[in-house]
Image 1 (tube, rainbow, N blue to C red):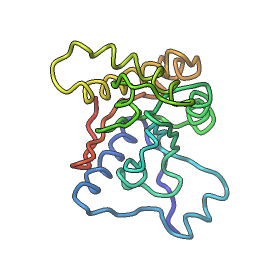
Image 2 (image 1 turned 180 degrees about the vertical axis):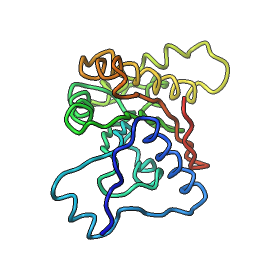
Image 3 (image 1 turned 90 degrees about the vertical axis):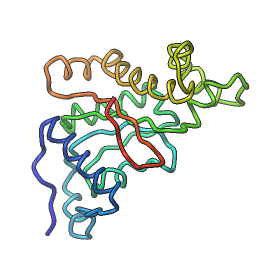
Length: 197
């Protein structure tokens, strides 16, 4: 029976994700822990190595780009990885209850949500609130050289990572006591590579 390895520390969890990403880039995935036996072991509970807060974009499936299996990652996804109380509660659950040592905030190239925030076009319905949530990254990079969208995407990833520990006493305490690391990262849709920011 294929089981999950012991829970690593934050550096070990990050190393495991980056090793999986290298396999994914090379198209040499192991597809670990994806058997029916593994599925059965997870009936008793989960023991993920990391929480990943990422965009809902269909091109950014964390389990695939990090070549991880069932039970390995606790995934929280919203458009533009925008943070609200439910997102904070979800990440807190991963840290406080599941004891993950790593929270990875994963932005990506060509993010449509950030692109909408960069644009001056109004958005209908609740999408307007998404634009408002992502606007600080646009404002922070307005005068930067380079591509405005890519600058805003990278800034938003960093701001989101800061927002997690700043707005959550649980996450802030875990960071302060070095029980977790909150790491911002960027996924390149073209190459498949994950870059730490």
